[in-house]
Image 1 (cartoon, rainbow, N blue to C red):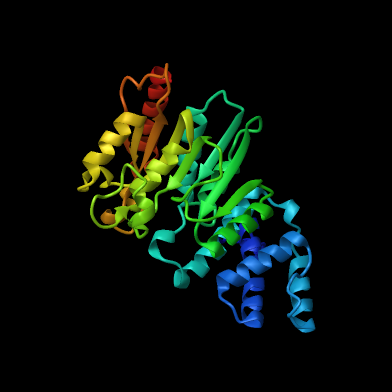
Image 2: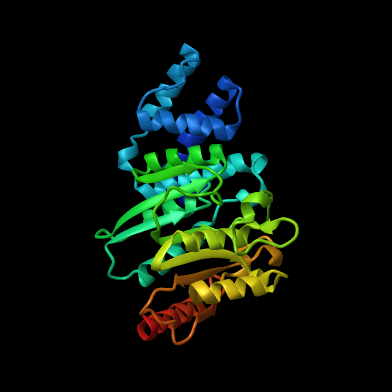
Length: 336
């Protein structure tokens, strides 16, 4: 929880977290469901401004109404709502969610938001897809930081129905328009190609060998790498000349399937940047990730003179961070 100096007054994020958490716990007990399911229910109540669960008792209804009346959502910034809701989701995820469903940290969302702004500079209408959207935290951190004159048309896909429900309720609470699809993102998508793809790649093996057979990056024997197939599917769903921003494991280009991935990328896209994130952001060196930026090939578009390569220092090292950001600004001046 966040504490604000010596003041007894709660910070906006803390007050909102208390609202989400306290009412979710009440509903969890009343409905005999998981915390995350209860969080989705309370989020729906807050958005609809009424209690949607007909099975709750009158006493519980009054307790909930009292707590809901204490907070007026329109008074809060979208990003404060996102962060408070994120803290509540993280609390619920501790016990219930697989490792590859962990939420993308805020700082990474801010980096990617900055990069999208730089690579799409001058465009005012942008369509954006996250094919592994989960609860939407990465997508929302981008939508909440967009420039005023930019219109983003957003799409999210996820196979997990509870995470997706938490995502669309989060979109409603933050007043963000997102079209969500509950399906396996590696099966045919009913979404037109987009200007931008963002994805925290789900790392692991893809169990559906029959479906994987239609991909160039399938493995000849055994299960294919899901993260490779997500890259291929994402490129397929990007407009020529569009950009893709992937959160990748640092060893992406070192696996036994890496040569095939290299060849595929050489044929379909230009690598624009590989930015290694600070190791301190991750639980272990094995879990460390980088941001990979690609541009889908298009007649008339040339590759950058040089790929932007950088390793971010500790975020607390302001001087080193300033040097990296200056290097990046110089790269954009010379290559974009």
